[in-house]
Length: 596
Image (cartoon, rainbow, N blue to C red; front, side):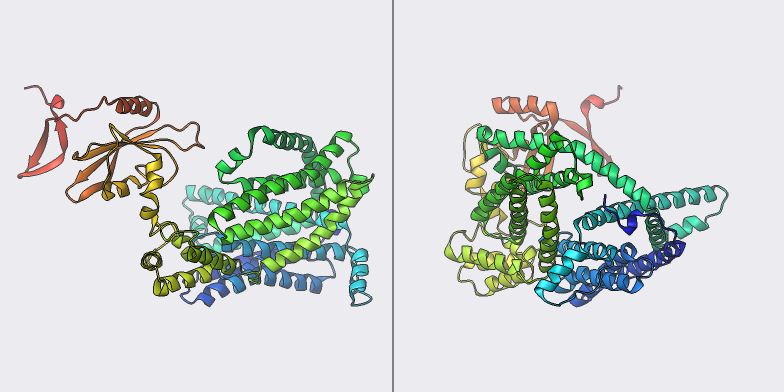
C-alpha cells in the first residue's frame, strides 16, 4: 500500500476540533441557503445552488487536504475544488425536475475536483516545489518527480474510506441523539426532542459529527490502511469469479445473438457498468506498487482477462448507442452516453496495449493508470462546462430530422425537446409553434409549451399510438370491428392497454356500453400475470374510471373464459337505503336481506 501521511499515526487534536467547528458551520450555512425562498430569477437559483456546492465540496476538500504546517496550500486547493464543482451550476444552470441529462455536468465537475484534490495530495506527499522551468518539458519533469502512482492510488482509496466512515459516524450520531431524546422524554424532558425538530440544530449536529469523525480518522492512519488492505484482499478474491462470468457472457453471444441485448433497452449502461467493475477489480489485483502485486497465477490471469474484456464490452455499448441514434436521433443523454463510451474506449485501448506485450505488464498498467488520471481529469473539467454544447447539437439534429421528413410531425418528440434539451430545445419549440409551415407541427409545439411537467402525456401521444402501433398489438374479440376514436384514446390509458408494447385483448361489441380489456404483462417480468379491467361508456363518452376484475392466478382463469366467449351481462336486483327521500350508502344485495 502507498505510504502517505493519511496512513501514518499522528497526534493532532487541534485539527479534529477545527473540523468539528468548521463542519457544523458549513452545514449550518448550507441549511440556511437551502431554506431560502425559491428564486424566480434564474441566476438567483444558480448562485444559491453554486454556493451550496462550493461550501460542501470545498469543505470536504479542505478536510482531506490539510496537513500540519500546510494550511495555505490546503485552503487554496479547497477553493479551487469548490470553484470547479460549483462552476457546473454557474455555467450550465440547475437541473430541473430532478437529475436529468444536464445533471452530468455536476457529476463531471465533482469528479474533476476529486482528481485535482488527489493529485494535490500526491504531490504534497513528496513535498514537491515549483517546476524548475515553466515549459512543457519542465512540467513533465516536475510531474515525474512529484506525482507517483502509489501516492495517487493510495489517496483515492484513503479519501473514499475516510468519507464513507465519516458518513457512517454521522448517521450513528444522529441515531444516538434520537435515542437520547426519547430517553429524556420518558422523564418529561423534551428539550432534545424539540431541538431535533429544528433544521438548524440538525445541520449543526450532522456537520459537527462528520467533521469530528474526519478529524479523528485522519489521526488514525493505521486503521484506514488496514481497512484498505482488507478491501483489496476481498476484491482480489472476486476478480476470478467476475472474470469467468464476463468471459462466459461474451462466449455466449455468438450463440444467443445480440437481439436479447437490444430488447432490454438498457444495454449501454449495463455494459459500461460491467466495464467499470472489471476495471476496478483488475486494479485491485495489480496493486499500487511492485510489493503489492499478487503472485498468484490465477489472479494475474484474471486481471489480464478483466483488462482485455474492456474492449468488447465498450464495443457492444458503442454499437447499442449507435442503433439508438440511428432510430431516434441525437439527444443530450445519448451524447453523454457516446462521450462516456469514447472515454471507455480510450481506457480499453490503453489497457490492451499495456497488457499485450512482454513480461512486466503490471508495471506498465500502473504507468497507464497514472496517465489516465490526468486525461480523465482534463476531460471531466471540460465536460463540466458548456463548451461542447450537447443540448445545442442534439436540438439541431432533431430539427434536421423533422425538416427532412425522416420523422413525421405525429412521431416527433415535442415533449422531450421542451423538457430535456435545455434552453436550445425550448427555443426550438417556440420557433416551431410560431413559424413552422406545417399546421400539425405548430399545433403540437403549442401544446408542448403548455405542459406543466415532463410526466404529462405528450401532445401527440394519441396520434402516435392510436393508429398502427395500437392495432398491431391489439386483438379484438369476438370479431374484429372498427373502433371509434374515443375508444382508441381510452385504450391508451395506463389502466387499459397503455402506450407500451404489451399485447392487449379487447372484447367489445359495437353498441354495448362496456368493454373488457386483457393486458399482457411486460416481457421483462416473468412472474407477472395478465390484468383484466372493465371499461364503461357513459353519456359523455368512455368513463375514465376503471374496475379491475382480476389479477394473478385468478386473472389467468378469467382471461381464458373471456377469450372463449363465456361471458354474459345479467340484470341484478339490489336494494337501496333512502333517508329523507335521498339514497344513502351503497346498494345492498337481496341475498343479504334479513329474515322477516
